[in-house]
Figure 1 (cartoon, rainbow, N blue to C red):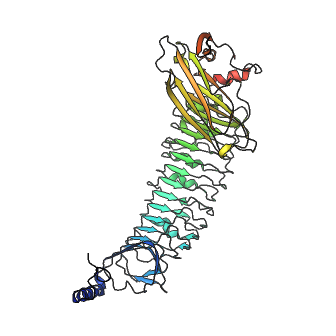
Figure 2 (figure 1 turned 90 degrees about the horizontal axis):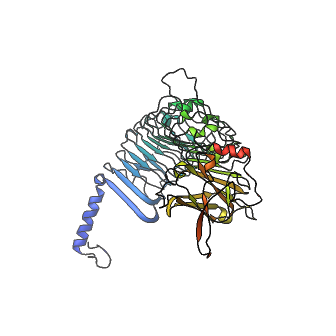
Figure 3 (figure 1 turned 180 degrees about the vertical axis):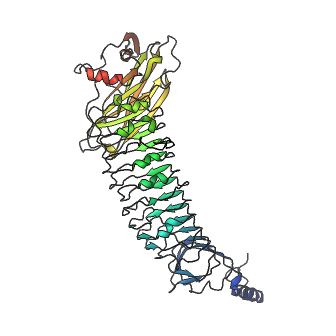
Length: 552
């Protein structure tokens, strides 16, 4: 390509002048322009006449990135425009009559109101006003019946969204998250096509809209960090909902009983809701025989950092038949529900920092699934065998391998002098080796702890301790517990078998004569020989509690 001017250009020759004049004549025919795309490497301020696009009647696409306009008065755009992306736009408007615009993007703009009077946008499908800090309200957009996506993320000055938004029948995606001043939103939602609804971070929004009709497409509903006090009973109309996030809703006190009608709900998060004191019971007295109440699809339930003291809603395991993970961290439980062993699909139980707990242990879980518990305290349960080293090694006799239910690991996390652990966190890992093959690994990580805590991890055998035995039929088990961040004050373990008397039928190594290796002398551990001399035997209460972990 040869330039007209500058080094290497053809200069002011007759050819150059003729070509230049031809180009100017072509650009004067403005109605031939169909697309303008300008994507600058660095922001630049330009003066654009309010009538710059007036004669471009065929203009279909206008994309101006990093272009700041200094024009006074609104810039008039042609009604035939279909695609408009102008971040940093300020004053724009269309002429009267129907518009053909399909996409409107003013991301990171200083615009204060939606274009013009928002009338006759009959083809508009997408509006994106992300990070428009000056946008204060969304007006009546009922004249955009085909709108599918409305993105108002982080519009910090947005106070009001017009009722018409709640009536858009084609709307699929509505993102109003991080609009920290939003107070007014439609009282009702009739958006039948809605699939995604996000109010996260709308810290001044106090009321959740009513769902007057069944919404068969809404899957994700996020209310995290809002000021809502309750969900409406009409939440039952979200018949296809799979995820609900109510985390950090400090004004939330309860949930409606109708929430048990959400048959497709897979994940429910009600964490960090300091005033949430009760989870509703299942409506077992429903008069509708076709009304299968409960959460048949629920897999993840997070009720951490709330104010719960009871877990009666968990007593009926049939209401959550495939529940996999339950997080009850930082509540006021004194004991866990006795029905937990009825949950066949349970994988993880988290009961961290239940400050009022009294003897909460893995025995309370009585589950064939993996369990994690963290509670305040400085002493391990009496039924745990204490270990002085990072690694414990023992042999399991041939007739015991198929009777092992699982293994419990316990550590005491020590508080540092400054009141927190090193690097503001604490973590340790657990490795299980069976006959020299690592069959289990788990990394345990905690946020900073303000005091000493007892961490108890229980995992079922699930064939982890059923590797091919050695030639003599015995199995060699090694358990390694290492501190990665913070300090472990004490550690211990307990093998859990079908019969309590089998728990201690393991053989521990003794030093060989030359002191360079360990030999297994075939001596079966009796009683609590692994404990220090100052510790006592299991109390009857502790002996009974370990029985809860065994098969009935």
